[in-house]
Image (cartoon, rainbow, N blue to C red; front, side):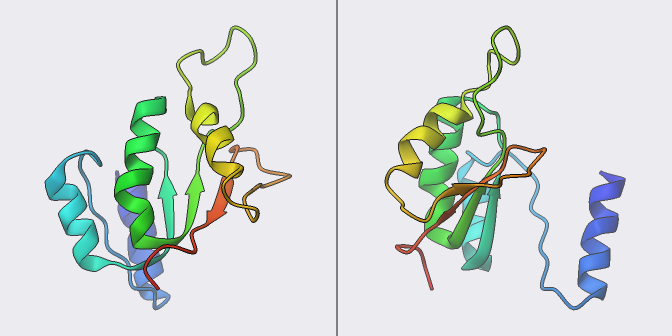
Length: 120
């Protein structure tokens, strides 16, 4: 957490409006705190990696941001990370949005969706 706080401080020093909210993203108090500070230019979803968890994060947080980035969207290789189910949700979502893409040189398996229906 020390590194995270150092990054927040660095961004603030660079003039960015940064707010760090810690807690379970599925708890209503965390969602309420995030909603009070929105809308956001970008929301990064990197949760529990379950299908249900990433879907709930999408449902809760996507209305608060213009761009949504998911982590770990590539289907795991056979025998590796079998609990990683983000790719299943990504496969459903990317077809709903023609501007969705996977970062071609990403080592973090990132995918972005432009959320035109979100707050402006």
